[in-house]
Image (tube, rainbow, N blue to C red; front, side, top):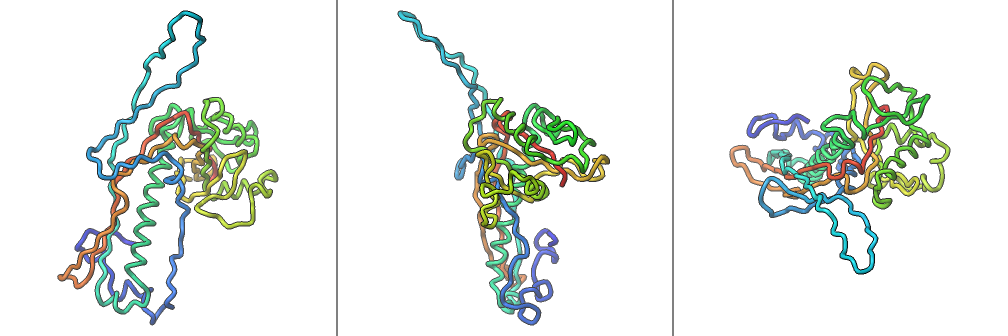
Length: 316
Protein backbone atom coordinates (compact mmCIF):
# COMPACT_ATOMS: atom_id res chain seq x y z
CA UNK A 1 0.00 0.00 0.00
CA UNK A 2 1.47 3.32 -1.06
CA UNK A 3 2.28 5.97 1.55
CA UNK A 4 1.78 9.68 0.92
CA UNK A 5 1.81 12.97 2.73
CA UNK A 6 -1.60 14.53 3.38
CA UNK A 7 -3.28 15.97 1.43
CA UNK A 8 -1.67 14.36 -1.62
CA UNK A 9 -4.22 12.34 -3.51
CA UNK A 10 -2.42 9.00 -3.23
CA UNK A 11 -3.15 8.58 0.48
CA UNK A 12 -6.93 8.52 0.62
CA UNK A 13 -9.54 5.94 -0.25
CA UNK A 14 -12.10 6.39 -2.99
CA UNK A 15 -14.59 4.03 -4.61
CA UNK A 16 -11.86 2.67 -6.85
CA UNK A 17 -9.23 1.95 -4.19
CA UNK A 18 -11.92 0.59 -1.88
CA UNK A 19 -13.23 -1.89 -4.43
CA UNK A 20 -12.28 -4.71 -2.07
CA UNK A 21 -14.89 -3.43 0.39
CA UNK A 22 -17.74 -2.81 -2.03
CA UNK A 23 -20.26 -5.66 -2.32
CA UNK A 24 -20.24 -5.51 -6.14
CA UNK A 25 -16.81 -7.16 -6.13
CA UNK A 26 -16.36 -8.90 -2.82
CA UNK A 27 -18.41 -10.63 -0.13
CA UNK A 28 -19.19 -8.93 3.17
CA UNK A 29 -16.65 -11.04 5.02
CA UNK A 30 -13.45 -9.14 4.43
CA UNK A 31 -10.48 -10.64 6.18
CA UNK A 32 -6.89 -9.52 6.29
CA UNK A 33 -4.76 -11.98 4.34
CA UNK A 34 -1.80 -11.62 6.62
CA UNK A 35 -1.00 -12.02 10.29
CA UNK A 36 2.55 -11.73 11.50
CA UNK A 37 3.44 -13.21 14.83
CA UNK A 38 4.58 -10.16 16.78
CA UNK A 39 6.40 -11.46 19.80
CA UNK A 40 9.49 -9.48 20.82
CA UNK A 41 7.60 -6.60 22.43
CA UNK A 42 6.00 -9.04 24.84
CA UNK A 43 9.22 -10.80 25.84
CA UNK A 44 11.60 -7.96 26.72
CA UNK A 45 11.95 -5.69 29.74
CA UNK A 46 9.34 -2.91 29.48
CA UNK A 47 9.62 0.56 30.97
CA UNK A 48 6.25 2.35 31.10
CA UNK A 49 7.06 6.02 30.53
CA UNK A 50 3.61 7.23 29.50
CA UNK A 51 3.09 10.84 30.57
CA UNK A 52 6.72 11.39 31.56
CA UNK A 53 8.80 14.12 29.95
CA UNK A 54 12.25 14.05 28.40
CA UNK A 55 13.85 12.20 25.52
CA UNK A 56 16.41 10.15 27.47
CA UNK A 57 15.93 7.57 30.23
CA UNK A 58 18.85 6.80 32.56
CA UNK A 59 18.71 3.25 33.91
CA UNK A 60 21.19 1.99 36.54
CA UNK A 61 23.13 -1.08 35.43
CA UNK A 62 24.85 -2.39 38.58
CA UNK A 63 27.36 -5.21 38.36
CA UNK A 64 26.98 -8.34 40.47
CA UNK A 65 28.60 -8.39 43.90
CA UNK A 66 30.09 -11.34 45.76
CA UNK A 67 29.70 -12.79 49.23
CA UNK A 68 32.51 -12.21 51.72
CA UNK A 69 33.41 -14.39 54.68
CA UNK A 70 32.67 -12.66 57.99
CA UNK A 71 35.29 -13.10 60.69
CA UNK A 72 34.40 -12.66 64.32
CA UNK A 73 34.94 -9.20 65.78
CA UNK A 74 35.63 -7.62 62.39
CA UNK A 75 33.70 -5.10 60.35
CA UNK A 76 31.70 -6.15 57.32
CA UNK A 77 33.21 -5.80 53.86
CA UNK A 78 31.45 -3.06 51.93
CA UNK A 79 30.95 -3.89 48.29
CA UNK A 80 32.71 -1.49 45.92
CA UNK A 81 30.48 0.83 43.95
CA UNK A 82 30.73 -0.23 40.30
CA UNK A 83 27.38 0.94 39.00
CA UNK A 84 27.08 2.22 35.47
CA UNK A 85 24.02 3.28 33.53
CA UNK A 86 22.27 2.57 30.28
CA UNK A 87 20.72 5.48 28.41
CA UNK A 88 17.58 4.80 26.40
CA UNK A 89 16.78 7.43 23.78
CA UNK A 90 13.07 7.94 23.13
CA UNK A 91 13.68 8.66 19.47
CA UNK A 92 11.20 6.53 17.57
CA UNK A 93 7.91 8.11 16.51
CA UNK A 94 5.84 6.23 13.95
CA UNK A 95 2.39 6.95 12.55
CA UNK A 96 -0.19 5.38 10.26
CA UNK A 97 -2.78 7.61 8.57
CA UNK A 98 -5.67 7.08 6.19
CA UNK A 99 -8.24 9.45 4.70
CA UNK A 100 -11.58 7.77 4.04
CA UNK A 101 -14.01 9.53 1.72
CA UNK A 102 -17.66 9.49 2.71
CA UNK A 103 -18.80 7.84 -0.51
CA UNK A 104 -16.40 4.93 -0.06
CA UNK A 105 -17.43 4.40 3.56
CA UNK A 106 -21.12 4.56 2.71
CA UNK A 107 -20.84 2.06 -0.13
CA UNK A 108 -18.65 -0.35 1.81
CA UNK A 109 -20.57 -3.15 3.49
CA UNK A 110 -17.70 -3.93 5.84
CA UNK A 111 -16.58 -1.54 8.57
CA UNK A 112 -13.72 0.24 6.84
CA UNK A 113 -12.78 2.25 9.89
CA UNK A 114 -12.54 -0.93 11.95
CA UNK A 115 -10.32 -2.51 9.33
CA UNK A 116 -7.92 0.42 9.24
CA UNK A 117 -7.80 0.56 13.03
CA UNK A 118 -6.68 -3.07 13.09
CA UNK A 119 -4.26 -2.46 10.22
CA UNK A 120 -2.72 0.53 11.98
CA UNK A 121 -2.11 -1.47 15.15
CA UNK A 122 -0.56 -4.24 13.07
CA UNK A 123 1.75 -1.85 11.20
CA UNK A 124 2.94 -0.02 14.32
CA UNK A 125 3.46 -3.22 16.30
CA UNK A 126 5.46 -4.67 13.41
CA UNK A 127 7.76 -1.65 13.43
CA UNK A 128 8.36 -1.99 17.17
CA UNK A 129 9.13 -5.68 16.74
CA UNK A 130 11.59 -4.94 13.91
CA UNK A 131 13.40 -2.33 16.01
CA UNK A 132 13.80 -4.79 18.89
CA UNK A 133 15.14 -7.50 16.58
CA UNK A 134 17.70 -5.03 15.23
CA UNK A 135 19.10 -4.64 18.74
CA UNK A 136 20.69 -8.04 18.12
CA UNK A 137 23.49 -6.05 16.47
CA UNK A 138 24.51 -4.75 19.89
CA UNK A 139 24.96 -7.92 21.92
CA UNK A 140 28.29 -9.34 23.03
CA UNK A 141 31.06 -6.93 22.10
CA UNK A 142 29.33 -5.78 18.92
CA UNK A 143 28.20 -2.23 18.25
CA UNK A 144 25.64 -1.93 15.47
CA UNK A 145 27.21 -4.94 13.79
CA UNK A 146 26.07 -8.54 13.42
CA UNK A 147 29.67 -9.76 13.58
CA UNK A 148 30.92 -10.02 17.15
CA UNK A 149 31.18 -12.24 20.19
CA UNK A 150 27.40 -12.53 20.38
CA UNK A 151 26.74 -14.11 16.96
CA UNK A 152 27.23 -17.71 15.85
CA UNK A 153 26.18 -20.14 13.14
CA UNK A 154 26.20 -23.91 12.76
CA UNK A 155 29.05 -25.05 10.53
CA UNK A 156 28.11 -28.33 8.85
CA UNK A 157 31.52 -29.78 9.73
CA UNK A 158 32.59 -28.21 13.02
CA UNK A 159 29.30 -27.28 14.69
CA UNK A 160 28.73 -24.01 16.58
CA UNK A 161 31.10 -21.42 15.10
CA UNK A 162 31.63 -17.66 15.44
CA UNK A 163 29.72 -15.88 12.68
CA UNK A 164 31.60 -14.17 9.84
CA UNK A 165 30.22 -12.53 6.71
CA UNK A 166 30.08 -14.40 3.41
CA UNK A 167 30.65 -17.71 5.16
CA UNK A 168 27.34 -19.48 5.87
CA UNK A 169 26.26 -22.00 3.23
CA UNK A 170 22.90 -23.68 2.65
CA UNK A 171 24.36 -26.85 4.22
CA UNK A 172 24.99 -25.09 7.54
CA UNK A 173 21.81 -26.09 9.38
CA UNK A 174 21.09 -25.78 13.09
CA UNK A 175 21.45 -29.02 15.03
CA UNK A 176 20.44 -30.10 18.50
CA UNK A 177 24.10 -29.92 19.54
CA UNK A 178 24.60 -26.37 18.25
CA UNK A 179 21.45 -25.18 20.01
CA UNK A 180 22.66 -26.73 23.27
CA UNK A 181 25.98 -24.99 22.69
CA UNK A 182 24.20 -21.64 22.39
CA UNK A 183 22.37 -22.32 25.65
CA UNK A 184 25.68 -23.10 27.35
CA UNK A 185 26.96 -19.65 26.36
CA UNK A 186 24.11 -18.11 28.37
CA UNK A 187 24.88 -20.46 31.27
CA UNK A 188 28.55 -19.47 31.20
CA UNK A 189 27.54 -15.80 31.49
CA UNK A 190 25.54 -16.57 34.65
CA UNK A 191 22.27 -15.58 32.97
CA UNK A 192 19.17 -16.54 35.03
CA UNK A 193 17.47 -19.73 33.89
CA UNK A 194 13.97 -18.28 33.95
CA UNK A 195 12.51 -15.95 31.32
CA UNK A 196 14.75 -17.21 28.53
CA UNK A 197 13.37 -17.13 24.99
CA UNK A 198 14.45 -18.20 21.52
CA UNK A 199 12.85 -16.25 18.66
CA UNK A 200 13.41 -17.82 15.25
CA UNK A 201 12.48 -17.06 11.64
CA UNK A 202 10.06 -19.46 9.89
CA UNK A 203 12.93 -21.16 8.05
CA UNK A 204 14.53 -22.26 11.33
CA UNK A 205 11.22 -23.53 12.63
CA UNK A 206 11.08 -25.78 9.58
CA UNK A 207 14.62 -27.01 10.21
CA UNK A 208 13.95 -27.70 13.88
CA UNK A 209 10.84 -29.68 13.07
CA UNK A 210 13.11 -32.01 11.10
CA UNK A 211 15.15 -32.85 14.21
CA UNK A 212 13.78 -35.98 15.90
CA UNK A 213 14.26 -34.63 19.42
CA UNK A 214 11.91 -31.73 18.74
CA UNK A 215 9.13 -33.72 17.13
CA UNK A 216 7.63 -34.80 20.43
CA UNK A 217 4.73 -33.96 22.70
CA UNK A 218 6.99 -31.46 24.48
CA UNK A 219 7.44 -29.47 21.29
CA UNK A 220 4.35 -30.22 19.20
CA UNK A 221 1.24 -30.40 21.36
CA UNK A 222 -1.34 -30.40 18.59
CA UNK A 223 -2.38 -26.78 19.11
CA UNK A 224 -1.97 -24.01 16.58
CA UNK A 225 0.65 -21.33 16.95
CA UNK A 226 -0.47 -18.87 19.63
CA UNK A 227 1.11 -15.40 19.68
CA UNK A 228 4.12 -16.88 17.91
CA UNK A 229 4.89 -19.53 20.55
CA UNK A 230 5.55 -22.93 19.01
CA UNK A 231 6.90 -24.93 21.93
CA UNK A 232 9.42 -25.30 24.73
CA UNK A 233 12.83 -26.92 24.47
CA UNK A 234 15.22 -27.44 27.40
CA UNK A 235 13.02 -25.12 29.46
CA UNK A 236 13.20 -22.32 26.87
CA UNK A 237 10.06 -21.03 25.16
CA UNK A 238 10.43 -21.00 21.38
CA UNK A 239 8.72 -18.35 19.27
CA UNK A 240 8.57 -17.84 15.52
CA UNK A 241 8.57 -14.38 13.96
CA UNK A 242 8.64 -13.12 10.41
CA UNK A 243 10.34 -9.96 11.69
CA UNK A 244 13.73 -11.51 12.48
CA UNK A 245 16.50 -9.30 11.14
CA UNK A 246 18.38 -9.96 7.91
CA UNK A 247 22.13 -10.16 8.65
CA UNK A 248 23.15 -10.62 5.01
CA UNK A 249 21.22 -10.40 1.78
CA UNK A 250 21.64 -13.04 -0.90
CA UNK A 251 23.84 -10.61 -2.84
CA UNK A 252 26.11 -10.11 0.18
CA UNK A 253 26.47 -13.80 1.03
CA UNK A 254 27.88 -15.46 -2.06
CA UNK A 255 28.57 -18.59 0.01
CA UNK A 256 24.88 -19.34 0.36
CA UNK A 257 22.00 -16.90 0.32
CA UNK A 258 19.99 -14.55 2.53
CA UNK A 259 20.61 -14.98 6.24
CA UNK A 260 18.56 -14.05 9.30
CA UNK A 261 19.28 -13.87 13.02
CA UNK A 262 17.47 -16.13 15.47
CA UNK A 263 18.01 -14.72 18.95
CA UNK A 264 18.34 -16.59 22.24
CA UNK A 265 17.98 -14.12 25.09
CA UNK A 266 16.91 -13.38 28.63
CA UNK A 267 14.13 -10.88 29.21
CA UNK A 268 16.53 -8.24 30.52
CA UNK A 269 18.75 -8.35 27.44
CA UNK A 270 16.62 -5.69 25.74
CA UNK A 271 14.51 -2.75 26.87
CA UNK A 272 11.37 -1.27 25.35
CA UNK A 273 10.51 2.15 26.79
CA UNK A 274 7.06 3.35 25.76
CA UNK A 275 6.47 7.07 26.22
CA UNK A 276 3.21 7.02 24.29
CA UNK A 277 1.18 3.90 23.69
CA UNK A 278 -0.61 3.49 20.39
CA UNK A 279 -2.93 6.49 20.09
CA UNK A 280 -5.67 6.86 17.49
CA UNK A 281 -7.39 10.09 16.42
CA UNK A 282 -9.98 11.02 13.83
CA UNK A 283 -10.87 14.38 12.30
CA UNK A 284 -13.44 15.21 9.66
CA UNK A 285 -11.94 17.00 6.64
CA UNK A 286 -14.68 18.95 4.89
CA UNK A 287 -12.45 19.86 1.95
CA UNK A 288 -12.20 16.16 1.15
CA UNK A 289 -15.63 15.12 2.47
CA UNK A 290 -13.94 12.39 4.41
CA UNK A 291 -12.48 11.39 7.76
CA UNK A 292 -8.76 11.48 8.48
CA UNK A 293 -7.71 8.61 10.77
CA UNK A 294 -4.26 8.65 12.38
CA UNK A 295 -2.56 6.32 14.84
CA UNK A 296 0.91 6.88 16.30
CA UNK A 297 3.28 5.73 19.01
CA UNK A 298 6.49 7.03 20.64
CA UNK A 299 9.09 4.71 22.14
CA UNK A 300 12.75 3.77 22.43
CA UNK A 301 14.64 0.45 22.42
CA UNK A 302 18.03 -0.44 23.85
CA UNK A 303 20.27 -3.40 24.66
CA UNK A 304 20.42 -3.56 28.47
CA UNK A 305 22.45 -6.71 29.18
CA UNK A 306 24.68 -7.40 26.17
CA UNK A 307 25.91 -10.66 27.74
CA UNK A 308 22.38 -12.06 28.13
CA UNK A 309 21.69 -12.75 24.46
CA UNK A 310 23.21 -14.62 21.52
CA UNK A 311 22.35 -14.75 17.83
CA UNK A 312 22.19 -17.91 15.76
CA UNK A 313 22.58 -16.82 12.13
CA UNK A 314 20.59 -19.13 9.86
CA UNK A 315 19.51 -19.50 6.26
CA UNK A 316 16.42 -17.47 5.53
